[in-house]
Length: 111
Image (tube, rainbow, N blue to C red; front, side):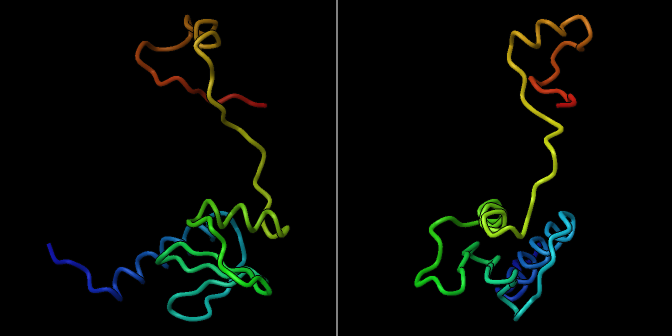
């Protein structure tokens, strides 16, 4: 197995971020090998850093989840309705007769 060159790592992280953003149907432009742009929001997938135009410093939060929160803050992303949630042990016991033993403590329900 070969170790990727730094450029391969950058391209892999960029591709992963772009794939996820496309899946979420979030429009963006790729400004260069390191930067994705969403209106005033800039994202650098290699380090996960976020910078907003007109702000003096980068945001403290990093990563794709932080990016989604910033995009939501600027009205550039609206998450879909929740279709999954964790259930409590009491809820599980209520459904115990329909669940298969050793299933995880979550299930899909409509909210």
